[in-house]
Length: 344
Image (cartoon, rainbow, N blue to C red):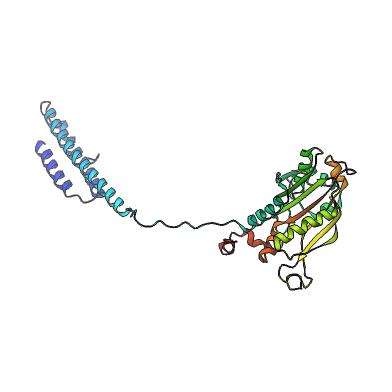
């Protein structure tokens, strides 16, 4: 049995020295040292040995096992080092090469328009006010002179979360919050930008979500002429110094009197074209004097104070300013569209 163990050791050492890769090494380890390997097969015959022979053969068997295991470990370490060296060589980086340039992003056209509008009104002494996109029915409708049974609510098909909570349909609630926070103090000059939500079908000019910027001024002696002068100044800075406006009578529950505001066509300059349907004018926003009832509900005496309010859709302004013919382009994340505004 001793001779068999020595022969096994010699054969294993010879085979292991010639092994070429880790898979072959593992096969040889199992062949010689596994539960059904050659060494185990020889040791099964130890039961036939005498008591004096067993310790001697056991010592030889341990020496053979140790020698084979040491060679297996040596070869395994070698293959691991070899694999690491090959991987490092493949991943080698030439640090002298120039870096890969990162593509520079740009402000989204809607955000750019919002920033432009904010800059214009901040320059006229306004401050920015913001509020929650989830509003109560009271602030979204009732405090704006739209009680629960008012037919004008049908103009805004809303997303209700509960009977009293909904996604705001306009940023007008921020005006109410602002007046309440001021607790009857004046003057108030704010613009209220933000997202609003209505259950509109998406098409070239409508979306279930869009952006609004509304403005509010409250003080003593505020007149319709102040509203017109403010909007004329805004449109000239937004669309160019030759822009003119016109006011058309309209209806909004929270303003009285109310007007729609048109600007001279940005495409033809007011001469008439396909964009303005040959009229020379384009509608951009609604406005009016704050309704006495709205002032009263927010803590202001309409016999002493007056004010005006206006509201515009950011997408509408952006479409006119940049000549975009479909509102859905702003939300499609198409780089071909967005890259056109990278240097604006």
